[in-house]
Amino acid sequence: MYKPNSLRQHLAAAIPDLQRDPDRLLVFADEGNVAASATASLSFEYRFKLNLIVTDYAGDADAIMVALIAWLKVHQLDLMANEETRKHGIAFEVDFNNHETVDISIKLDLTERVAVKTGEAGRLDIKHLAEIQHMPAYADEFWKLYAGETLLAEWRTPEATP
Image 1 (cartoon, helix red, strand yellow):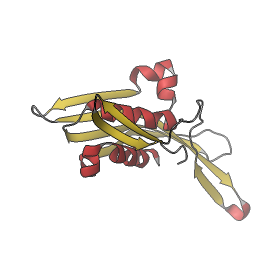
Image 2: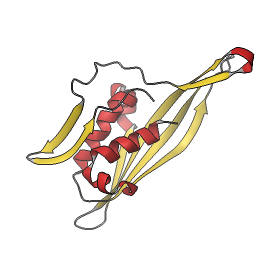
Image 3: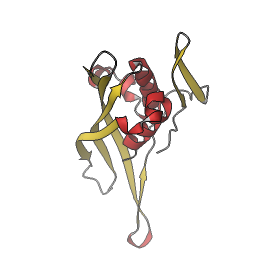
Image 4: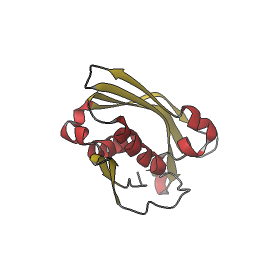
């Protein structure tokens, strides 16, 4: 699976608190299953709930959410494009630790398509497939998110390839 690590790298690079201490971002793939058809193909799809936990976070939650949505627009657009997945595909919980920090848990319903092709002499080649892009590419390569004059987060446009 490539999406958990890809999202971890994206958020750790985008959020100043996580740049300083990336170990405060915990990533778990829960409730996973594999969907494969009864055809001759060995291709399949991972389906799982990705649980991101940011601990002791003192920043603005908007910074995490906007950077997350930017990544999802490239890697799991159906969470926003499909009305049913929009209802529950991006969930969160916040634990207020004290007057300064929170723990934020974000749960995402993710999928990853994996193609397995048969080559010569029994060789099997595996490739994780990028998501189909239904929207135009981002106009800018680099983004900065502000609340007033305060810089909340900055990131490069996420790569579409796994």
